[in-house]
Length: 186
Image (cartoon, rainbow, N blue to C red):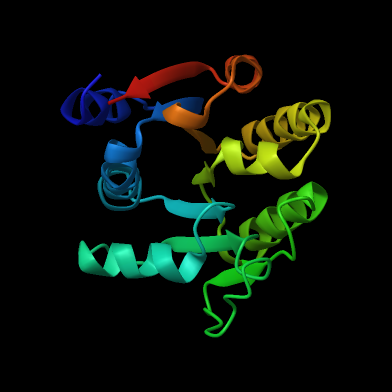
């Protein structure tokens, strides 16, 4: 589907769901922008962005360029430390030392939800491909299953991003297993 069809589909979600989204590199920023716009602005819910691919500072800079307000955005950054890119500590971010620390990712997300957010949340995992590089696939599958179950118990949405050019059959199987719906955006 193209970006306009994706935007229309996202608007149709009235109840929290888990969405697997396979995106091409050329649509990467557009998909993130649509998710931010539709959930934080139109649905007025908070967003927790788990960054395993791009440091939170870089994502924040992109949002600033697009004029997206970060008042409803929190980050669980598990790549900055690994990339030695922790020069600027963001007040709306918590840091995990490595994408291999899956339990800490879940605990940091739970911490943000308990401390700052009392209502529905969208959690974006960017990306399953990066997590797959750093973790055993069986452990990653188990983590994502537990994470989705936790988010459902909190009446929250989840968007699991996968880069099309890097997606293996095993990653697709995991996404299909933990997602209520999988979408492909070109």
